[in-house]
Image (cartoon, rainbow, N blue to C red; front, top):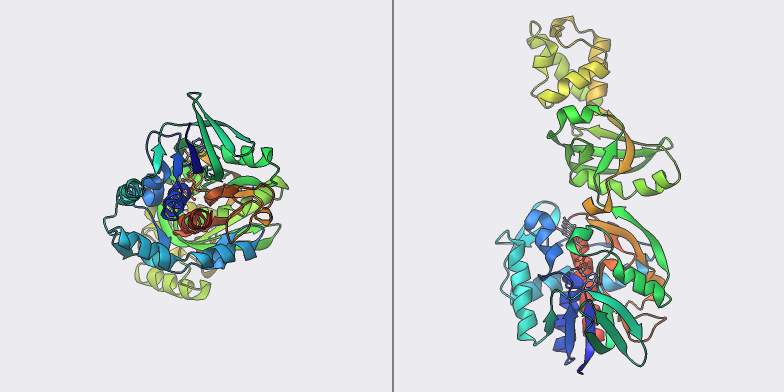
Length: 406
Ligand SMILES: Cc1cc2nc3c(=O)[nH]c(=O)nc-3n(C[C@H](O)[C@H](O)[C@H](O)COP(=O)(O)OP(=O)(O)OC[C@H]3O[C@@H](n4cnc5c(N)ncnc54)[C@H](O)[C@@H]3O)c2cc1C
């Protein structure tokens, strides 16, 4: 039976890049993947366009209990290096807002195809449709697959992802094995996930998208604020800005702290300026129903809610609105309040917060400090990033270090 130098479980971005660089260092490598296709989650990233990385990678966009570890890993294999690597494979990049970098083709499949070819070029044994059922350690590693075949290897890289979006394969198996071999797991919970609200009126305006700010308030304190697209859905709110604040909600829910969110669809206007502008609109359109005068400021379907919250009947004429009523309208436009019921399930999350405790991993090699010849790469660790290419960069950086230093 062949014994490989390195076995890697998981053909996500972390496992693939680890395989390529371990092989470039002369190791015999086997990459095991339970799905029938390679990099299934990569294909779903960036709405099928794959936000490969971000031009502005910095530690403040990452979360986890050991920021020194995260910094060291990101600095050892940077966004510039992953861009160079993909360019060497023939991938062109295009930059979008906030430094987000996508393949010029706008197709995540270009990224997976290029990686697939590179795996072949480097003679890496890739076994798709191979669920690893059991992992044992003796002199080396023994992996048992679901068809009962056995794989032997000197070194093992766990690149099985976290628990988010298990429909793409990441069901937490690696976390189970890490625990089995003595690693501590920082409790996991969904991050970058939509939010369910107690208010059911959201259903009436589902499909409406705003570009504004969303702020999380817990125990009366401002916790976090993000700006970007906010989408109303049948259960609550979704979209990049919403996902961006979701990470901070789990701890509140765990401790039964009521969490409130405030949406401002026009953050660029102060209360005072917006009030002046609306006063002007009312003066010029005094004979019109107030609801018809506001449709250039906020989406039409939202206006009845704003007026209701301000206590104003929507067929009142603009000229009949008092200063106090106008102030209330402005207040309600800039402070759309929702209360958090719960987060949507892991199936709808883009990333897992928590994971293998990085205090037990060497950032220079990604090797376990506890178990010889065991390595980690990607989302399995207690590291998660903001939306915008930060999570894939984490997978590339940690995967590269594991493969290159094994
Ligand atoms: C819908 C969606 C969109 C996203 N968009 C972006 C984006 O645009 N940019 C960005 O930076 N991040 C994005 N992310 C996050 C990013 O995709 C992940 O953080 C990243 O894929 C993690 O890489 P990984 O290699 O650690 O794990 P994964 O990509 O989860 O790969 C783990 C692999 O291990 C395999 N596996 C698990 N257990 C076993 C087993 N027992 N045997 C064999 N194989 C096993 C799984 O099948 C899976 O293929 C998105 C996530 C989702 C869900």
